Image (cartoon, rainbow, N blue to C red; front, top):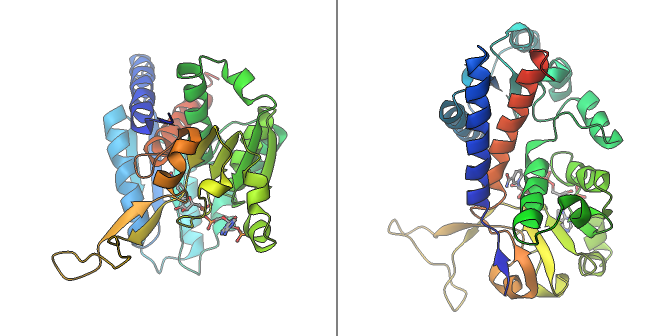
Length: 312
Ligand code: NAP
């Protein structure tokens, strides 16, 4: 019987730990803080910013929102970043992309203080990740590893170190935000790690790799990419994907909502119902990795706060 990993409970547990640590810091007169930098009004970024603000409030963090208009110059954005770098109330800076085209991602990211780079965007911190000297593991990959570590401890009654060492881990997707960093985090734990991507699929080799995985981490952004034929019996599957798809009836016809528009729902990259019973454990979508991601960002902000106050 497959275990559906309760990522919401894991997220809540981490939040309790964050609140406790924040209270301890506050008794020493230190308050952690996060600043978001949104240029213009991208809808997805505004949603994400709202979540960060809510979690900061819940944890007792300072929260600062910088939101210059879409036609701001790159020079002005860099000045804002420098102001945040110099502000002791800000432990971590989170640039919310995409930026308008006149603003270079690279230039903005390279101007962030490496000790405030809480989502590991700066090449210095990505380099440290590759070297196995991680300061701030990027939030989504860190969430994947945290879910696996807590699963190992709580369900398999195993030391996470033993759980990862020599495990066959296959990652689907090689983006700089999820696939590559999660592969580094797995490699740093001595897992035998393979990374697959669109060219693996184009050569017809995806299944060859994924069916060898003890732990399969999928981050491709393609609904139903992974079905039962792509999964080994008894594997642990972590689905990072988030996709909006149309709801269909038993005849494959779209189901309409009350406004006469096709109903949609959120799914991952793994065909959950078809794959679940083949696995030992699986993370759902929604209420999966996403329920832990923001908490990992907060954990990084706590760490940044301690570093910036000379406590680490
Ligand atoms: P991305 O930048 O679009 O990268 C997707 C990766 O998947 C690419 O490396 C791509 O390969 C690979 N890929 C695409 N189609 C494939 C196929 N048919 N077979 C094998 N590999 C394939 O996306 P991302 O930012 O990494 O995000 C991945 C997914 O995770 C998205 O659904 C996103 O919404 C979700 N996500 C979730 C969270 C969370 O907290 N739960 C956070 C971030 C992202 P190529 O580069 O070679 O094309």
